[in-house]
Image (cartoon, rainbow over all chains, first blue to last red; front, top):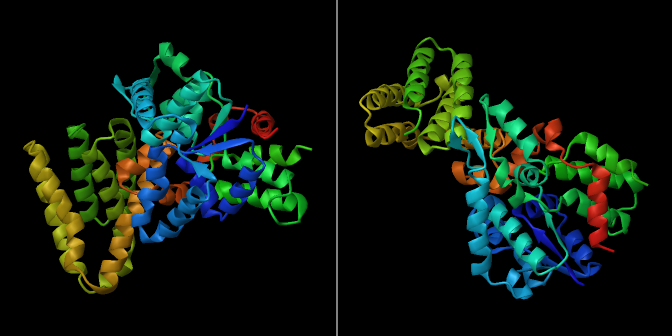
Length: 227
Length: 186
């Protein structure tokens, strides 16, 4: 069955700012499935930056990917925007009331991130294999280790943050990758167009980190050590 | 307005620090605003965090004081700060927002280098504070929305910090995540 990679804005931004969108196009050619973005993500990577001179070019590059069919919208899977919207609202309501600081909810995530989670849930129900590509860390931590997010919030906010454990179940089962894993595959498959072996991999992973991909230096070393 | 007492204290102490020309103290006060801004995500608290940080950066740069327009800018800054303190004391939020905005609008009365420099300080302060909120655990998109900046600006800035090197950020073994990605391409 064809698979789906759901892209959050953070991943497209890291790739775009490193001039790696062409490589994303090459990856799409060897991928049996679709690369999908939601309306909310499109707003963040195209509709808003197109009005900011400094990022207008990045927005145009993502638009070209859409025009070329590298990135598609959920309706290409027969999923209507209102379906995502309803799920997104629910996701945001739960996520943004899951952590309490000084007895008040901490608003953690916004529409784009929540829409990726919502689409993931819809695809899960439709039994379509999929994964979320997200470079920002909060949503990933929420889905993979909410306890770590609690620890981070408690430490950084210098207050005792409480976690509503009953809501854990809503965030179980999400699977996340980042731009770094995608570019590792591009490197592994010889799609990067540079021939300097692991030096290229090192350069690409660090470049993505420096443009906002939430990966640690240690993780980069681990990835480079993979045979 | 949330945490009114805290805002009042920060503004009063900032006023005193300006009087004695203590930029380091203003920066310290600005850091104290970040926690409250992250927790409450209240626009007034966020505005205070950005402006106080900007003031600390402006006061740090003693060379700005020799530029044309400095005296006028300084006068508007201190007068507006006095007014905002009164507004908070009187619990007049509308007046507070209007007077606080005067600090930013003081730029419009400037020209030349000082105008350019101070505009840049305010813009950089927004990105810096956004990065701090992201560091505190608020998502990238939520933070960008709160500060009115693009995610491109935030990603570019945050990537140069050590935010993603914090051990609790690692939520899965790197090899396992690569395996997840590879499986999608099999």
